[in-house]
Image 1 (cartoon, helix red, strand yellow):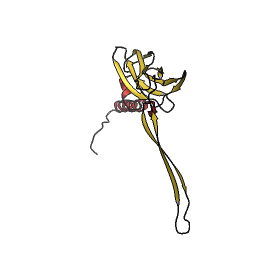
Image 2 (cartoon, helix red, strand yellow):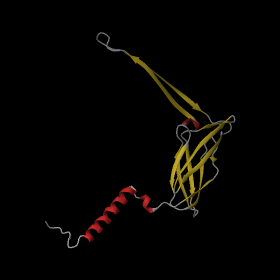
Image 3 (tube, one colour):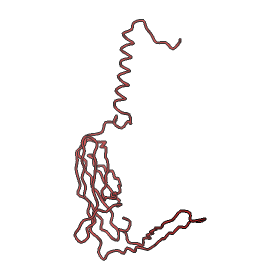
Image 4 (cartoon, helix red, strand yellow):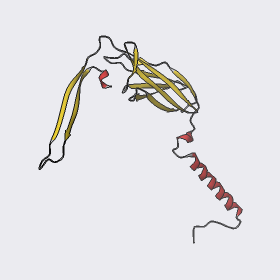
Length: 185
């Protein structure tokens, strides 16, 4: 929602109808209505919060969550908000990614762990004139290091078939005595 930030927003609505040819002409009716929505900063900023979870196994994990705004004690999801995910690798190095909450207010990030061990992730969201900044609890998960071969965009089945065919050709060639392969016909 862009109007979580104070400002003036132009909203245009259009509607109308038309009829087919009437004798030698046609007519069309169309109406437009423009109005401005003025959003002012509240006297006090709205409280916000972030939920976060991580699940998966091996080296692949889904990190999900939702940013919320609390109005009059009720939480409502905040779509369109940028959320920064800070991943901490087992060696202590940090990796940051920014994701945007969808229409339902939730966000998703997929992580392929390049190091085995205990990882941590925390979500943060910047505040503005209308809402407070927020951060989630830190979530831990254990990961196995991704195999370097898993980074190759070739299906394992194709690799196995290729290696198998190569081995079969070598075995057949060794079993046929006196036969050699030559390039001339």
